Length: 331
Image (cartoon, rainbow, N blue to C red; front, side):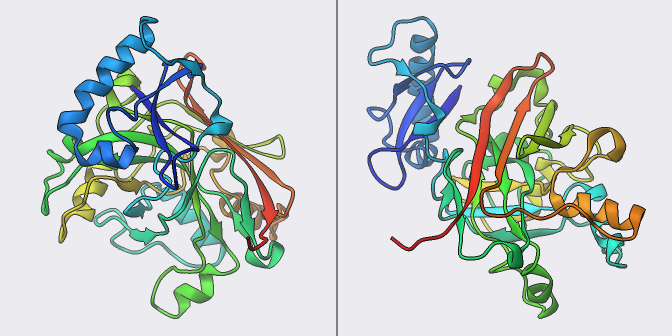
């Protein structure tokens, strides 16, 4: 089942069910007004959403319309919580190596995780707007994230997959010119992490079939900037931690409320020559280590980013994030 939030009805959008091929949709507001409302009452709402999904697939639903991702907000336009891990060692290791640093000694034992901005989360075609460009070092981070139901404190790694409700395509924007001094002050990210964005649909695990093994998602994740390919990555390999481990880590000392978004950090594969990079910082780090200096610029106003993941048959799993970087103008 694929769910979207239409850009209507308020800041949280209006819930709709989208066909498997993402060509048609039907409003689900009679079942739950928003995706967050559905997640809050998932046990009761999910059966009705699945009935509507079947009716859509069989051509029996009323009010069907052509689905346009440009009419979509993020599936969760504002989430209660966004927690992002750093599960791909080859991203962390090369970025740190380029500046003469090493990953934490316990990297493979305890996941790195921070709490990022979750209000707002941009929709798939909403522009990223900032007051500055070059000085900020605007970067993308290509990710997959899961959206949980209510997770009990102390959940085990074995039980954690049972709390994954939905999976989404995520772009975790980073401001590389702002992050180092923030971290240097010893109190973590704030201004260095601006808004995130999501692909147009959130997908239930069963919809992904064998591509989702309960812990990681397999497929090909393609990243383009201004039409030039930056990476063609495989999220299902080379991860030091999976989503079950990340959920268990996040819930060690707290309950996670329904609608919590958990990412695994910028994607990276061991074979960079084959797969490329999941963010500009990593590509610049490879250039630094290879050539002595980076050459690829960070994003600037007018740049276009395109992120999309496909299965083994080339079918888009979540639709695409297709965004332009623009100057911010106060409304």
